[in-house]
Image (cartoon, rainbow, N blue to C red; front, side, top):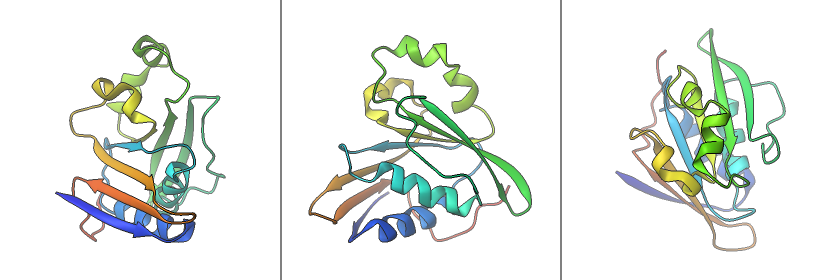
Length: 152
């Protein structure tokens, strides 16, 4: 199932992300795609809101991976926030131990996931964000968006 949303600003983008995050489970991977400045990190901030992450969520462009610890219904959960923009080869993914994260019990969020689609788990949820105006973004979510709370 694919759903399209028109966001008119960063707060709406975060709200769509919060609704989406309510459908996530441990072990899920979220493949984020879109151009520079489209709102991939903003979408990640919305996901982090749902999981009660207190740290400032920033793009891991230079570090490749930020790990955020949060909670869901009183249980700890880790968010693994990747940025694959600067990676040149798939081997670089393995050098950072990608399988440990993508197939672990946390939730992986991958910006620039389209650089190495073949490295993503088959169960990955896909979110594309396109710039359609100065502040407007078209958010395309594949994999459904029921407004329901996940259980851990």
